[in-house]
Image (cartoon, rainbow over all chains, first blue to last red):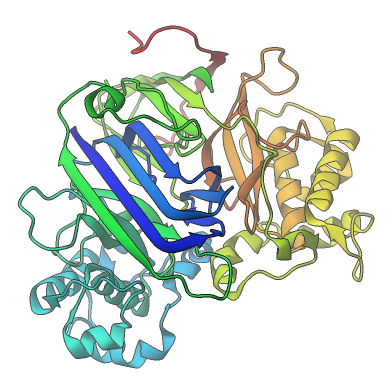
Length: 315
Length: 292
């Protein structure tokens, strides 16, 4: 088990007071057999109310409504997780799906349909041409090998470029430029999987990487592919790795543009100049003290969760 | 916040040793903004190995492979959760979806297709006939009121019957008998929602009820409906309430038969007589963690 602390702070400063419309936050890590949230705090200013919900894809999403005009919006998430997915390659694919192509069971097909539907259908021809080198009708190849080759090609042959703008680059543009951000690489990989009929989706989250290789501030994006028998498997399309205990998933979505950590706007037609400050720290955490004591960090009433030991064991 | 301990033990005893095939367990509560898993201990005999995975619906599922033949299979889950969903009625539906009928955004529609697809299409005539009084083409009704009226009709007019057999009763059968188990009521409600184009899915889990009303051993089943703006909202089709801090969801599935807590079989064609013992305790927890 590896314990990781994530401190994620976003501040918008406006030149004059604005009336903020409701904001949507996708910043709570996806808890499950692999990730336990041990401590969690979310501090937001100005005055606000928070309603949590489970969205279509099962993400825990916070809808924040603001109670007063403000010149500054600050969203600070500070949390500690325990990560248990230390052997991500230890998975087993159903016999029927070991070799590609294969067909899904009728009952699986209905659930797979949304994730087999291209998000950029007009780029299909370009993606198809690129995929020719990996698989042609009549070929048989190990499913995992096919996925790994596509992933390695993106990670090794394409050049990583930090892109600060929101949104993603179309798959055809990434193929033309032979470059992109982690989001762009994930988008291309997802479209490639879907072209081959393999259900795939977008993941946004955090990456723990002590020796920073690439990527800004340790927010990160990657993809998941659904393989019968193994479930959703994570592929990092920037490093070429299978997703393990350095990856902390926050949100999964069908369309790569639907998972920004913070989205929302302010009321009115008048443009108010603003600056945004982002700070993300992802680091291994060895203390067992509650965060509020180690950091002087106080939880807001709408966000507190108790500090509690968490162990999952099987004997 | 309410802290709840769940002890769930299942034991199968076989008259002669069997070679168990891999078993699938859906017994880990769904964590998220509403439920925090404080501690979980899972004990299984005989010798085995476990692989966890996230299934197509996002459930944390354990696949257990056994290493030796056995005359007994025991699966004991002991865990403590904290429940934060104290105000389930405090939700806001998007303006466009407050009144039924409404349209989903094109981007949502793709994701929702599986949950609008009937699980029992050959029963849709019976379901449609039953739904006549609730809504007719041309009418406008508050979406939540429509859902609540269907839910209340099931709770008030149908008799609860414990059913130990696996699987669910078809919606047409529940309508004919005017009776069923919690799974059967959820199944009927889900098919009714889907008939109206409202995305719905099955939930299996635990119910905390100090004064036990219905249901055996506090395992329970209910449903979730997707409402734009509010997300997936839980409806208990046995009690008629909106799901709050007494409900602990474990697994969500499109088809009501895909969420048994324990499923698996043994090798060979010969039937080996067996008995099953089940014990489920769901109680408020005030003790100290970790559990010893």
